[in-house]
Structures are given as structure tokens and as C-alpha cells.
Amino acid sequence: MTENETKQEEKKEEKPEVSTKDKRYDFLKEARDLRDSIQRGVEDYKKLVERNEELTAKNILSGKSDAGEQPEVKKEESAADYAKRVMEGKI
Image (tube, rainbow, N blue to C red):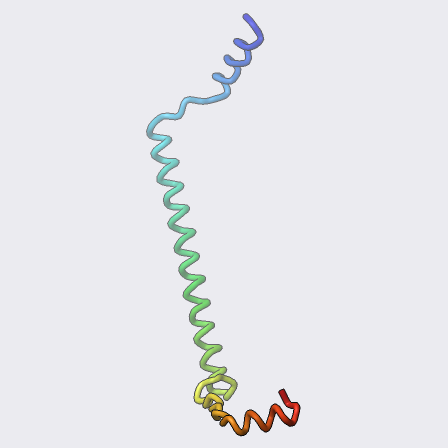
């Protein structure tokens, strides 16, 4: 036998034959693990949403939120006022 044939035989011996039943079991186990992981992620997300709602409520009740603030109304400047500002060197 050549060296390549020996290596190929060793590789064949290293790979155990997996029956279809084992493949199915591995697939189901993998699917269950994935489902559990997704469920944990959803639970964590729900906790984060609840925490965010609590913090938002505290922020609003403490008066630190932007709710109810009136935006600053900008007054239109007439041509005369603009000319006056230019002449004073403010622009």
C-alpha cells in the first residue's frame, strides 16, 4: 500500500457511520436548543421594554422630559431691521 492509501483508510476509520436515527436526533436537539435560545432572547427583550417604560415614566413625572415644551417661535425680520443689523456690524 502507498502512503496515500493508508491515510485514506485512516480517515475512513475515524469517521463513524451515523445512522439516520442519530441524524434525526441531532437535528431535533439542535432545533430545541435554537428554540430555547430564541425564547430566552424574547424574555430578555420583554424585560428591557418594561425597564424602558419605567424609566420613561419616571422621566416624564420628574419634569425632565421634552413633553409640553413649546418650540421657540422665530419672529420674521423686516428688511429695515436686517439693514440696521448689517450697519451695526452684527452680521
